[in-house]
Length: 589
Image (cartoon, rainbow, N blue to C red; front, side, top):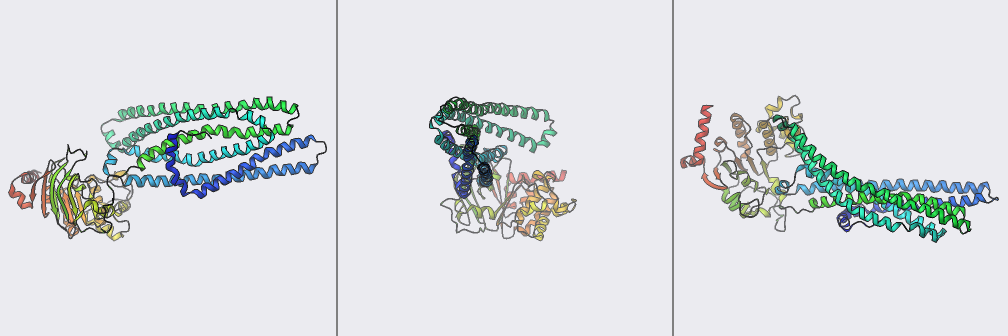
């Protein structure tokens, strides 16, 4: 086999831990392919003996039958060895593929929010499908055919040298040219495949967004525009794929042409050696059979080189994701002795800047204390920093400056698994899985009993709606809960959070899609749930917040008002103005 470009080799080294994990299967696979090729490359030797035996007038039937039996046994041995090779190396590649998929999902799950802001869903799906499949093709077929090429060459050339060193040398002269052609084309394939995969990301991203937003596309009659846009991206992918295919199409023909030139050498030089009685007809027959055995390994050089280059390019792209260090993670400062949270939260001069430059802070100088078991209401206009503030508590974002503690522990000292387990956030845009309503609620606690699921649904005022559905809690909600209304999705997400029994419950405008009567009933049910646990409510409705122990008003990332409902009304500021306007709207309606 020819040497792959150094860039490809460095990227393929990432696979070493996976191959080491299945080294027994790799070892057995290499043993079986060696055994298979020992048998297959011995067959021409026996055939040559048979040809020379048949030329002797004194040959016997037993001699012929014994030669036939040898050929038959060697053929069976070769077939069994190749079957066993596939059962080890190809199966091993499927195991590695599974491990890669699991590791890829595990790698993206631990990433911070900014990671997903910089990458589209379609891009990640392209990695998950095409790239991992390309790596699997390298690990399985490419390794198998590489080992096959090496062993066939080794054994066939050994037999050929034993027959005639001169003729063997003449045959191997084209190999350096083959190696050079393979290396040159391989580099171009590597670059071309990386370009194709990057364009495939754009195709999957566009398709995913079009499918997910199909209702919006139809509502605005934008189907022709979306078709044209996808057609342009798809055409670019087509052109880059064709360019790659043109390079790949040169590989096998060039290998075959160069190698078939050796037939002329064998006929010319071999025929002369037979005439001079330096070789027998059986010896020359062996050479032709060995050449036929070498045709596929030589042709496979191009095919395998293509797989190696695709696998290397894909592994490099996967490595960028899998090697990415999460911005938010457990560190040496993490105190793993912390196993539970009580819920006392303290913000001390906290600021948040998504860019990290300090030029555009989202939150500025937040000083806030929420006692264990207390409730906090947050009111503010769009973009005032309400969601950013509460997202600091489960460390969805990292504090830029200042100090955030829970139960006296610095937020970075609390293990992430403890923090995310004991803090439940119900966002305004509720995400539901394409499962039943029951399974979406039970996501908060997979071990919950049916009674616990129903209790959470009743508190969230979801139970009555579910009973009106034909399949009840077994109703499939569709992708992102498409079969449910906005209010039903929010209540399903709320039931999920209640079922998880968190120490800190955060409702980020999670009741915005329900009417005021339903909201009042939900808040009434939450009264019992809120006892003994820290609760934070974000809402644009004062009616949702007025019963909280403490209420803050955010404006431009700063706390501009703070106090109880009555204290804020007496202050006659933003909160009081909002309250009066909402009372007037209710009277008018």
